[in-house]
Length: 236
Image 1 (cartoon, rainbow, N blue to C red):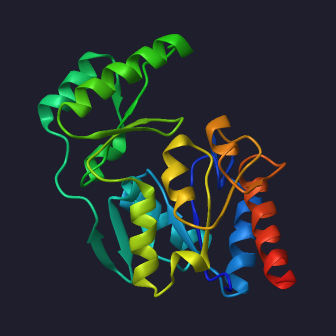
Image 2: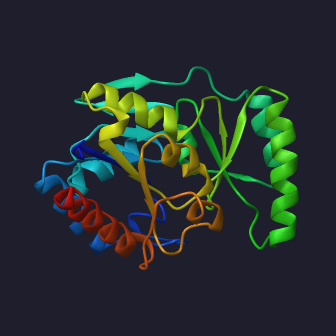
């Protein structure tokens, strides 16, 4: 079936590389290329809705905007809530007691709350903290998503459900869509479409699950994926 939409993560996928949050000029070229061929780009991010929606405007993507790891969608000025509720304040205080730092974007979030790791924490301590956070969140029936940038406490089913709902809004089936991401919180999104990709510096757990691993990092990898998708469509 012809490709009609591409769901894309933002941080680490449309930015210069993992850990560098500057938007990649290569990613902008990739978005404009897909849009010029009639393929709608859907931003699917762990960021808050105002940040993700603003990026969509300036990047030139025409699809719905999916924020908060699938919990909230905006399309044509209307907001759709995929998730319900939010983590209780007592749980959020427990995370701060562990040393996690709340994201400034939490003030603008409806459902998914994000926290940064303590400064200077090593990988072993980070893993221990994630286990502790998971125990606390799961006791409340909530999911913990690690994006590689922040810990998200999420009351929904992740980016995959958000992308599927966004596709419904524009009348596109999952079989007509592709997705790209770099982090472990992108895995469920990458699994709900038949064609998936990742930048060359994606997390190892992502690389083994996708059909296309780009050579370039971040946005350069996104541009590679966009070109590969369009060339694949022409061959078919």
